[in-house]
Length: 304
Image (cartoon, rainbow, N blue to C red; front, side, top):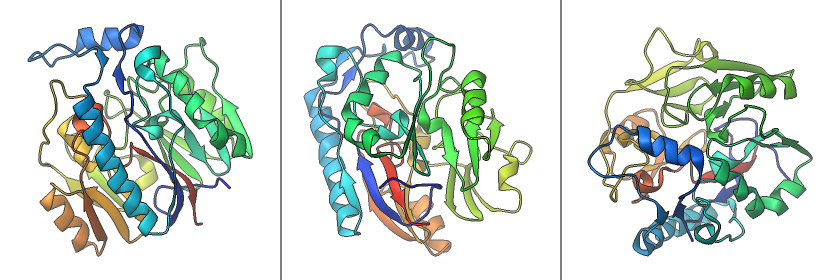
């Protein structure tokens, strides 16, 4: 069964990613262009297989996450294997990017990096189990990583950025005519889930370096807002595929429980002040591989 309408309902079934055979694409045209445009000048953007030591450490942390979720009573599914190094793809580390789940529908978006569309092969059983499946057309100018979208019951929030464009927004609105989908463009980078974190109905955490009082999405009118103005910068290997704000990328297990980066004492303190049970874990390669706890998971079933 697949059914998930928001980011905070009690989690019952989830995909947890896998870093095996992770690869930095060599021939993907968009990946190459982004590498040429980067403002990070200390080192060149890496290409080719991710070092095995990085993969091993990432998988160790994903196993801890899997065990933790299983202990909490959550059914965990892992992606089918695919050798991205042979096929010059990217990875299965971030299933949140690849598929959008809304209710009993799975949306297969046209991803920013075309090579990442091959990741769909790793989720065939999950896609087949969905009541509804929507395939976003390729080669029609639409770009969408699923992590550009947040689900808020009868509303969605869509970030217009490098990984989600206006054409994809219009297509998504057409597919869900009964859902109010608000377009926002406060951050030109990529995904939305290190900027805005809905913690439960009526409570949202906001990245104060990207969002301010003037551009807070209207969907959060009347919600209590927790402003975060700094986090602890994590280490990375060679080149950071995520900023320090990946620390805000957390997984809400239920309206009272959050999995958060263990190396963020102020963030943990803030969450506890709002009476959350905080489960501190680590993803030591979150900046290297570009994914925090929300990124490396994809909820398939949340209790309504």
